[in-house]
Length: 531
Image 1: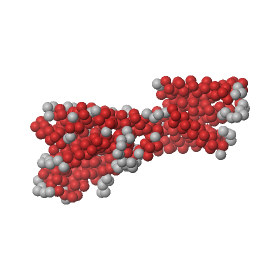
Image 2: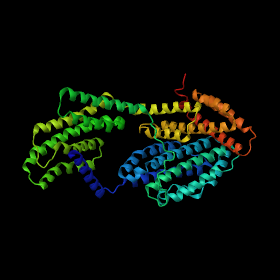
Image 3: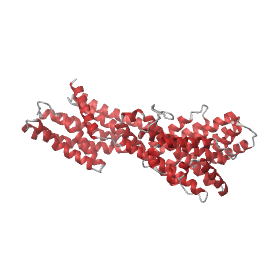
Image 4: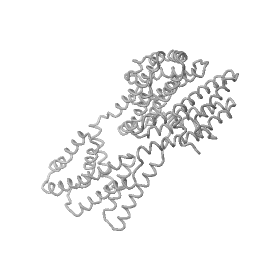
């Protein structure tokens, strides 16, 4: 009861101080980041369409950089969730908003890749029709590229995008090329709709739905190997300290177990930064032991009043807090955080202070050993390197895509998309722009394969589709493209009418998307194929 009451009182006091001093800027910063990204993506897309009639600009580098910036939103979302229980309740909507930006970039990629392959006359005609289908707010580059438009009234822009999506989906198209441009532009705007839902939540826009929207959100583990390595490391480190505790009958062994468990579990998700962080924490512990011993045995015995006691604590906490606030070096911040975090447990202030040096150094030794074992565990069983993690994520996605092409039971598009989105977010900062583009292309190909196979089932052309998709499974992208073109000729020669004709035209558009992605990233889709 004593320990539990101490913890509860500490949490309550920290909450009161934070509520009175921290106004919470993470939600505002996240809203600005979302709005800036969405506005820039929409503005650059509109600029590409505006210039395409004269000369199509190369937007490949821009799109790949946007993928990196969308990935970088994930830690900012974590900060916003930590500040607000309201944001945590609606966390699926924020995750879906990130997925929406990825979807928008995927649609932009499809439009840009296809326009780049069209003859000049066909490109001008297609761009002109698509531009006419967009409202002025989205067609005008200055308007669409202004972040204020996205923050001030996101729900009004949401309605504009909804109307544009409906217009593009219903757009009469007589060629698969125009159908592709309309559908991929609609996909781009549908992604923006999900991003606008997140912005409306972050700016507390009036009239937004009050219930959390988990549409399209699914928890998915991008790669199980890092998690298994982290679990093995924690098990071995804790077991080693526990065996040492049992063998030596060390009175403070339980405290050492607590500290090694907390440090290993806390830093394991940091990947290649974990070892440096644990080493910095161990150095901070050593500094905290020295500072706490100086205050406890050199200062406190001479002090009698509570203000004097507070002044003694301030001699440590005020300089440490100031140094943490002004420091720009992560390693220095980590060392100071460890010192501040462990100073009070080492000092162990009570109404009647206990100045037993043996007890103090036993407790300090338990903390030092626990924090010293953590960097040793990370050194002996290191996490996967960033380069290896990137290669694994790409290889796992390629394997899943091959399985998808011949899967007897198709997953839903939401399941496939959430799986690849989680891998995009898990890409380390060191991933190259080309690797991010390959993962985004795999996302597009998988989604189009699901749609194409469903259409083939309705049109009775499953055998032709399976023949082409089987070459994707075998890693023969050139052969797959040739068979997809044969299938396209087969659909073009049919005399379907009504719904079947519309479905066949959309299927031909899907074939173009898959073929162009395979042609652009053939080396990736062919790599690692079964022998």
